[in-house]
Image (spheres, helix red, strand yellow):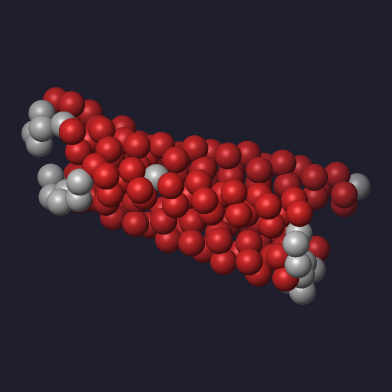
Length: 144
């Protein structure tokens, strides 16, 4: 019975991660398009709404659920002694920092104070991708 419970927690953890990653991959792309919109235009205002809703309604809850269920699985199954978990946790912290930076950038766009070019956001879009690849390899291969 405990194994079934663990599998449900793991499934919901994975669902939350997918939602979080979708947001982490999409929000910087919205910023690229937002850079191309004229400040104060209808298009710019639409991007502000889309960015705020994506961050608050999808990304923030998904991040919280990912962290909560992930930590529950670590605590409940004593994985702290395995080396790959330390590396994975570092990558998840870096994903969280990336999320926080995106939230700050959203506030800049909201206040019409963005000073970064679209190329900056194109590069920022790659960070979650690289971290996701590393995390998947660590979890599946468990190299150390």
